[in-house]
Length: 185
Image 1 (spheres, rainbow, N blue to C red):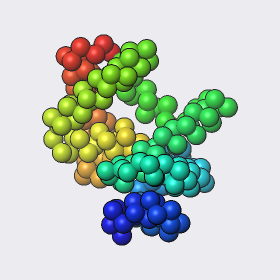
Image 2: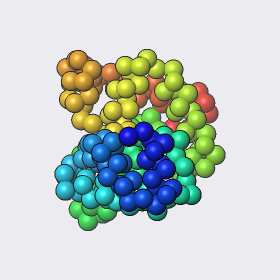
Image 3: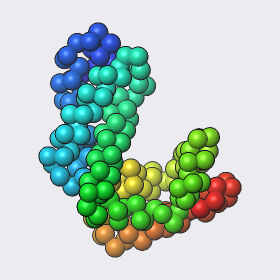
């Protein structure tokens, strides 16, 4: 089913919007959530919450890209659930992923300031636009979708050690690009 039709179902308050969304984007949302949470059960709950959140937001919102909209909802809900679990007990795979990025993104107080102005997001978008498609894909799979390094490497047709080094170079490139843009890291 086309995205325009699915959005039309939401606007018409037709409950068929939920199964149509799940049929087209459920796999993406489940994989993204599972990568962050590491639990199929928690991932399923986050995906259900994604459809609930979309139902409450559309209308009045009319997303330009349902894929991006649902992925962002699922990712944010999964990160919220991960933070809740982390507060209860320390640990988890996402900490490794976040620690990899801590040397190339601004400190928390600078992030808030930069995000408020949109400066950080625009700088990262410009940096991503300058990457080769393969590097952009690898970076996003690891740091947006939360895939394990061995999964990213397999999809790129290389060994995990090579991908680890490649991701390290990409993080360093991001750090340098942000510094050149005047965003203190």
